[in-house]
Amino acid sequence: MTRYNEHLIKNFDIKPAVLDIVDRAEEQLKKQFTELEDICAINQLKVLGAFQDNKISDSHFAWNTGYGYDDAGREAVEKVYASIFNTEAALVRPNIVNGTHALSTTLFGILKPGEELIYVTGRPYDTLQTVIGINDHDYMGTLTDYGIEYSEVELNDNLDVDLEAIKNSLHENTRVVAMQRSTGYDWRPAITLNSIRKVTDLIHKIRPDIIVMVDNCYGEFVSAEEPTDFGVDVIAGSLIKNPGGGLALSGGYICGRKDLIERISYRLTCPGIGSECGLTFGQNRSVLQGIFLAPKVVNAALKGAMLCGAVYDMLGYEVCPPVSSERSDIVEAIKFRNPDLAIAFIQAIQSAAPIDAYVTPIPWDMPGYDDQVIMAAGAFVQGSSIELSADAPLREPYIAYYQGGLTYEHARFGIIKSLQELVNRGLIDVKKAQGENRK
Image (tube, rainbow, N blue to C red; front, side, top):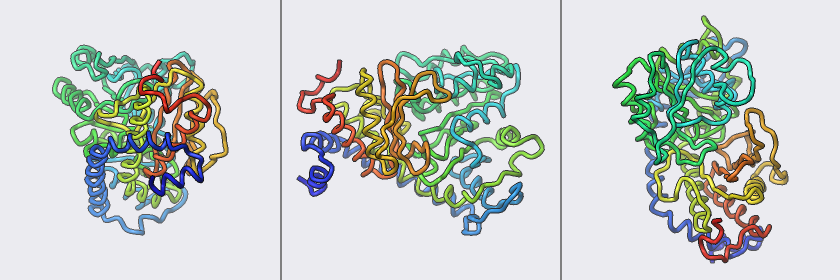
């Protein structure tokens, strides 16, 4: 037994049978972990090159006041993002409050009344449904409220993009074809870069006037490429997910074609002002340092997600994505089929956090969601899902979504803690043969 395991048994009351399962799962992943280290190294060089090419200096950490005119740090941050994501321009702002806001700003910036938005990866994430206006809530100011048409194309039987159906869905007024890379609250693997590339190539070949947009949340630095490397016109995401590296205090980013970023900047501020104003409130240092560390942080989160999947797969639960599949985001889903199991799992992840570990999360009515949601978010930055976190909408089949971990060691401990808690509550018997928990 390792000294580490002895420490867990003595100081955290972790049982040897729990540690044995985690150790065996980790052993199975050695080859995949080595491949992830290679991707991490490539991305680290990419980020380093962006800093050097744009001549980043400590003068870019300073900030001014008021309107934020001539903010050299803000301009430097946006040049770094444009370089990393291989685009003509970028918006990186602390006043973008979350990923949904970044996506909403993008959509409102590039769509006009009478034009059509098509999501070709099925129904988007819950909060985007509210932005579009396709759920039961009667919110003002949605896309459909402004006369923008919406349709969607379901994934095929293999839970992948349906190219023929996408081709047939296009109309004369179709303006934007959008894809959600991450799983969201669905039960499907994240959309791979290869699938995103196929859709992009198809649309640009038959309708070059259509804008291809990707919701890149949870996908940054998972692979050695990003969607904009092969022609996606615009991507958007949150700074308190992957690219913030755990250091960005708030904000979102939008990267893409220069003309699109200009239009979107007019929605972010107002026509005539665009990206020329906007105070960064001293965040330039943490945003730059965060994205510099992001490749390594995402690597840790990825390994944690894979370990989580391997552990619960060994116990007989369905996990998504499957352990051996290609990954395109940092999320691992576990189908518990039991509300008590899902709630206990989320509460255990919270108890493994560095912040508010003593707090017991409970399901609640979250703004923008139709079902009650329970979230573990004991993070240094509120709501930061690149830090160890998990959440579950309280609806059948009671799926918990695990993500994040600033270090692999912390992600690993969260998995150990979750399993031990389920054992303590009598919800899992780790001594049972594989498959007996799958009901």
